[in-house]
Length: 213
Image (cartoon, rainbow, N blue to C red):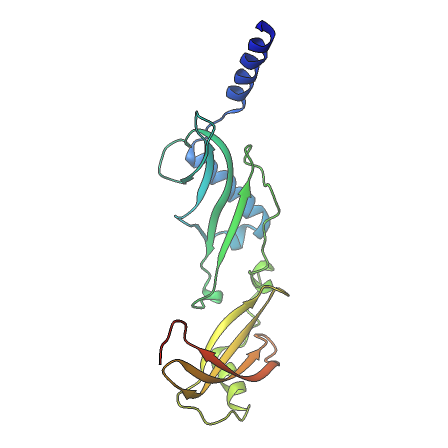
């Protein structure tokens, strides 16, 4: 019986030794250093920590919970990991609406990278510290005008999209052919952002969710 108690005491001591806290500023600085190493000094200057960044900690009862970074001087409880440390890119050559510009870092309990930082959503010209080689909006409009699109009810709308299957950006163009209450008929183009190549050209009926005629 005494042997079992001794083992339990050792386990508790081991648990308490492994438990650790960090200054919140140190946690942020460590995450920043990992990001800077990945993207370079020049591009790093265009990133800001997302206020909705979180880490996980363990309570005295052993439960693992989430806590927002920046709410306290020190991390709460026993630090487990930084699985949701987010930085947002704000670069003048990548100033597009409705584009996810977040980079997520995943740190382990020692503030080392738990996995490689995914930089697929950052255009190559930014990672290589070069001027943008993407089409300007006027050049893009010229290419759209040359496609002999069908007569539409409104001017075409254009949005930048990211294809996560093959990790590339493309411009998607919606040319509305018919607009009803619960659906619309669209002529759609996919355009490569640097060459202007037409990747896809098709028509599609799109429905409004939860719409009742």
